[in-house]
Length: 297
Image 1 (tube, one colour):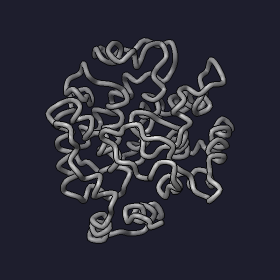
Image 2 (image 1 turned 180 degrees about the vertical axis):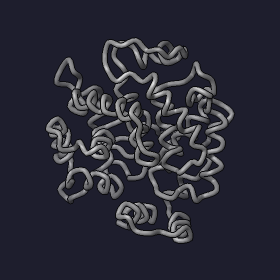
Image 3 (image 1 turned 135 degrees about the horizontal axis):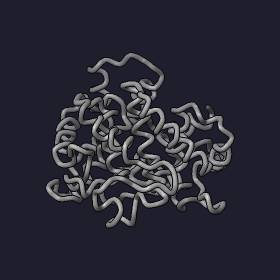
Image 4 (image 1 turned 90 degrees about the vertical axis):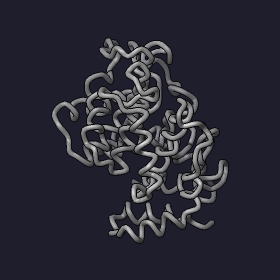
């Protein structure tokens, strides 16, 4: 199997190698995966479905270091900001009533990871998380936007959406890594991570069953859904992977390793606008690279 140049770049970046802009652009331009990711989404960018498709594409692109050096990525970021930014957070409808915890967090994370320069806009998404994202059960949500608690089934009723908590804690982690923490941010992050660990990474509190069947499926990158790989990567970034409540999730991933030493992507959740990094059910170079960093930690 031939390793895509974008994965070679990611390996080098993760090792701390110095990579100048010209070399990065050369490797990104050569990448077959990047060329597929940069194809315009078919959906109309003036419609909700088009903005959501653009969000998905940028979520995937943000997994690759130095992707902000590409002009098209910068153009797409500008469109995403123009369509989703509100003075209170990020909403795919462009107004506060459409703000959902997972999308606010994912857009905020994308902006941090691609090195977006307007820090005040990033902080808008972060502030929403700190102020409104519940990370405990039985609390009232103080946010008054309509869709969060009505149209989409109640992302923040007495039990907050687990995916919303995960995505929000990823945003806080990325922000802290780039800009540093604060008392409020650190406190919210600590409580959110503990909430995740209380669920033993992936289980319902009321039973021994997964929160959702797909949370134990292997896929990478991650859309609005999350899985063991993403949650454990979050915990690793916060030096919590050695917590004994991670043990079962790690063991599940170990058992998923193929006889040939690779892991594979089990499923693709966003077929209409998603570009798979690895061929499904085949030895996956990308997902194996990510998982090796968790399993061999």
